[in-house]
Image (tube, rainbow, N blue to C red; front, side, top):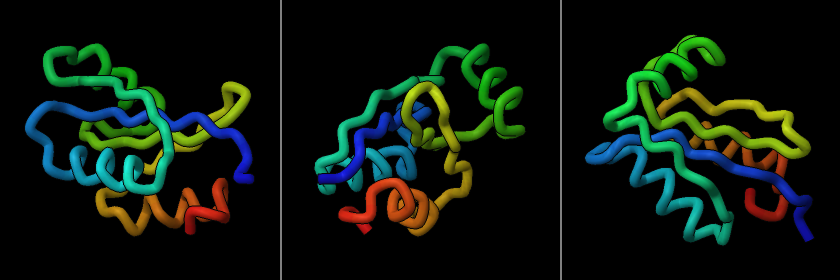
Length: 90
């Protein structure tokens, strides 16, 4: 059994990259929470303060309140990060 992790997807409406990330997570059976930045620049300010980016998708992966972020666009980056945290989903 894979270890228990939390996944948060920062996304916006109409973002094809965001939809691609969510679809992939669903196909892998990985539950996630979504933070929608569509009409909330304050959320983008948070991303900028935490990771130096204002774009989405950003995927946070972590446990016990400690997260790392995948800020690069492309599923290969998400897959690589999940392979470290969820070897059974590589």
